[in-house]
Amino acid sequence: MVAKEVIKNFEGVCKNLKAQEKLNIIIVGTGYVGLTTGLALGYLGHKVTCVDTDTAIIDKLERGISTIYEPGLEDLLKDKGNIVQFTDRLLESLSNADIVVIAVGTPSKSNGDTDLSFVEAVAREVGSAMDPDQPPVIVNKSTVPIGTARRVEAVIKEELERRGISSTFSVASNPEFLREGAALHDTFYPDRIVVGANDMHALNMLRQMYAPILEQTFTPPQSVLRPESYSLPALVTTSPTSAELIKYSANAFLAMKISFINEFATIAEKVGADINEVAKGIGLDKRIGTGFLKAGVGWGGSCFPKDVRSILFTAGQYNCELQLISAALDVNQKQRMKIIEKLQQTLKVVRGSTIGILGLAFKPNTDDIRESPAIDIINELLEMGARVKVYDPVAQQKYRETYPEQKIVYCDSAVDTARECDALAILTDWDEFWQLPWKEIGQSMDQKIIIDGRNMLNCEEIKKYGFTYSGIGR
Ligand SMILES: NC(=O)c1ccc[n+]([C@@H]2O[C@H](COP(=O)([O-])OP(=O)(O)OC[C@H]3O[C@@H](n4cnc5c(N)ncnc54)[C@H](O)[C@@H]3O)[C@@H](O)[C@H]2O)c1
Image (cartoon, rainbow, N blue to C red; front, side, top):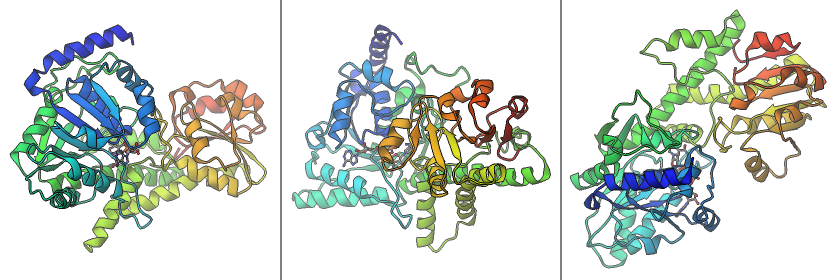
């Protein structure tokens, strides 16, 4: 995108928000959610400060370099002008804040419970420095277990009491539903915005924050155009507890949908059906819908696995069994090992074989490898004595940094990876894997075996080049 055009867009958008409608917003946590939200709200005309304790992140962002791979993000970052500030000092940013959005990580503990230490640390800092006469609305955007809005309120109150202050302030829950890889699109054009609040002040402030999105009054950025069929999003207002449960229900349902189709992929394979045809046949029923019905190696990423474990943990605390969700988790764990089973079936002996892995990210268009199926599959292959070559167009560097001890061969392209391999396994459906030079690839492999963990290839086409092809449920 041409820089000048973006700056023009920024100015145009800012004019849309009148001075009294602009809010002073602090976003705490500048990861996938915080950075996307901060840049989008800045683009819409609010005055935004993005805070992160990781000074390396702040340093890079200040220089206009994105710390994550997310389509369109760097365009906004480069041309942010003075609208979005980056800092590692929350305390200094708190004066004059209208809204403080908490978007820090909420990782899993080993028992499945959610580690809220990052969220509580932010609440403590806010309580230790906020202006009690003009308190900001505190917003939980991180995915947090039931009762966290109350917990954040309690922590802030403790800090205020320590300062000898009694003040009334609001804590709202505003779960995030963006998809990595389409994060800006989902932020500018969401299906709905959920706000859980107990008072009108918090609700009104959040309505004001999201007004340009709710009313779609902004000029779309060149790199994130408004879809023609897009209609205004609903604002769903609830209690904080319902909002917290909405987020877990949404992720658990989507994870369950994928596990459902993967379970049916197993039976499709046994009876000789094609799961892609089955998914289309059921998905066109509007009651079911086509989304999240793609059979493959299963779900991963930073959200579904931890959120599913977290809601199971919460349910356990209430002595309540979520049998469908437990089963979805089980099916998913087994699904990853289907790749290993298929390699054993076709190669017979895996030890000593060379396996090429195409794709490390948990899905395309992101560099996020958190809980990616590739991790378990590569570990298992190494354990079994295979030599592993890998290639991912974007996530490779992150994988190498995260697993420096792993003895794997990093390659520069899919073609390079395939050379002298006994089998290739596709684990992420990156666009560039659609159109690979299969003839050349086949000629360079020791055995022409493809395990298509994302059912992305045309199996008839691939077989024409002499490959033994195995997909999931086909
Ligand atoms: N990634 C997604 O697709 C997605 C989607 C919806 C919801 N969520 C939820 O949003 C939250 C954030 O997810 P993410 O993927 O952006 O996480 P992330 O790990 O990418 O980023 C979190 C950031 O918070 C920073 N941080 C930690 N403690 C801090 C503190 N005290 N002060 C300031 N910064 C601090 C970290 O340095 C890190 O940069 C999680 O609860 C997640 O479940 C994520």
